[in-house]
Length: 89
Image (tube, rainbow, N blue to C red; front, side):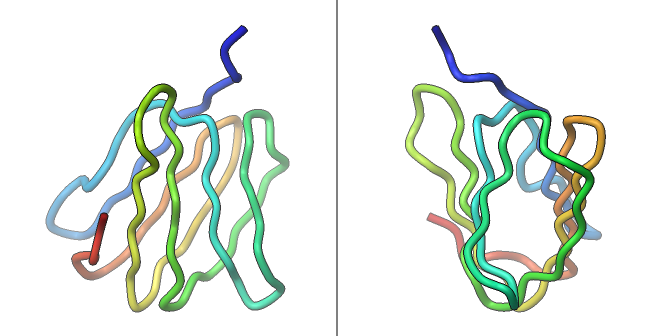
């Protein structure tokens, strides 16, 4: 049985860097490491110079690092906003 998924959108002012279904989003904020999974509670956090890892079913994880980003989670949707281009892998 596949893992539940949710919608993720990663956007900068100039482009959409990722948009699609994911199984998890992982990063580190000032309180430590966290994971966002399907049906996560409402959540907002600031990420500074830490990897944001988006796991998509049957693909290698996508990793983005920005000087600063905001992650906002609500209603089984994760929106990630940044003002700059990333260093991704």
